[in-house]
Image 1 (spheres, rainbow, N blue to C red):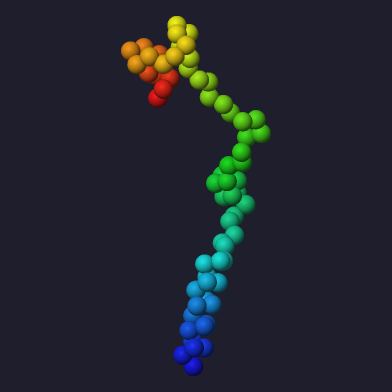
Image 2 (cartoon, rainbow, N blue to C red):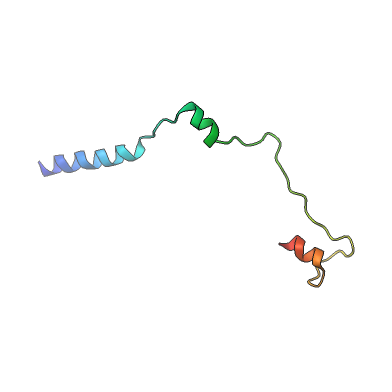
Length: 65
């Protein structure tokens, strides 16, 4: 009898975790933002005065952050 109750409890516990609540269609439009078709890339800041990073150059320091 205890084994039967334990199996029911464990079955209920795992079935409760697997259930997904269905979202409202309008709420889903606002919460789930689709990925853009064209990937957005940020422009990298480049220092045109020298080819390597210099810690005394403010443009290089800004680009590294």
